[in-house]
Amino acid sequence: MRELVFSPKQRRVLTWWRPGSPDRDRQAILCDGAVRSGKTLCTGLSFFCWAMVSFHRKNFALCGKTIQSIGRNLLEELLPLLDDMGFRCEKRTSKNLLTVRLGGRVNTFYLFGGRDEGSAALIQGITLAGALLDEVALMPRSFVEQAVARCSVAGSRLWFSCNPESPAHWFYQEWVRKAEEKKVLRLPFSMEDNPGLTPEVRERYRTMFQGTFYRRFVLGEWVAAEGLVYDFLDKSFWKEPPENGLERWHISVDYGTANPTSMGLWGQRDGIWYRVKEYYYNSREEHRQKTDEEYADDLAALAGGRSIQGVVVDPAAASFLETLRRRGWRVLPADNRVLSGIRLTARLLKAGKLVVCAGCTAAIREFSLYHWDPDCQGRDQVKKEHDHAMDEIRYFAATVAAREERRGGLYAGVVERSGF
Image (cartoon, rainbow, N blue to C red; front, side, top):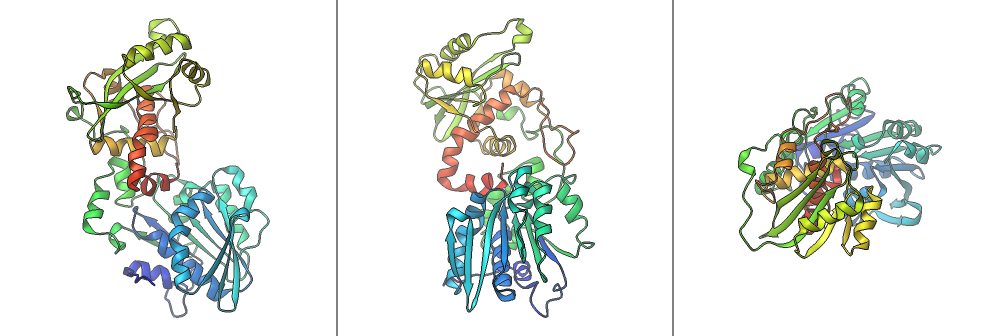
């Protein structure tokens, strides 16, 4: 069995429910704060130990943004550890449940995904002795409230973990601010609370985020997204393209009819992606809409005879995608998740892994105008203007540049875990 070292805050999570603990009268625990701060593992381990010590032949819920995220973020690391500790866990993937045995006790743990408003119906009707909700701030209120309502067995408790969002978020208003009122033990986590992180790894994570995301994911603060989306960019980021040696060419496209169409030509050198040229057409300003065939001609002109490995396009542009396929282009439907894509794009820009070259004037103009929408209470949303090159660059970052991130394991740990 591998030796585990826990920080004082993690030990408090592990023991808050034990006899003699000063926190024993609490009805729930809430662990929020920075990424990679050790919340998930100690929360999950404590939940299973409590359930198996306290109950026999009862039902419990393990909830995440999706069932896949529960497996990836929690169970993949936790189940081998529980096995080393003498737990016997039988996973029935087809039924999304775990049967867990310890000594003479046996309990059932059901897996639920709280992806959208319709997810509340999935958990309705079951009687639970407890529920763990990982990434709870990414779940709709209806799902969380239904999970809470199902915990009606005497002695049942709730376990929450999440990274911070906006202070207007419903979960912050109803659970974080009202923790004492609801008899919730709230423990804010920082990266220093995870003894498994070396100083070098902590510093790497501190340099990965900027602005609002730095304050949330590194400092662990519930802060509103405001101002420029990419507020760290200045003139030093707009560089001249390398004179030669670029390879692995791609084109990214945000397709519009009444709205502008933006295309970017990307080439790679020494692990860095350069957006060396662009195409930007605003049909309203030009007083003429173009056809799919005309845009396909423009894309070919932007390629300039280069060997293009893939064209990244929003999958919503179905007719344009089909036009490109008929012409022989290899089309890559874009990952068009907005918030996770923005975080990834910002991190790659800041790290110098994505470079927008000085000649891409339309993209540079949009970077200076692309704002968070201040009127969206309780959720992060960008203002739907000056966003066409921004969307197209985000498509490229999330669909092509993310391949290198996945190979290193960092993308899955930081971006996908945020659930977008």
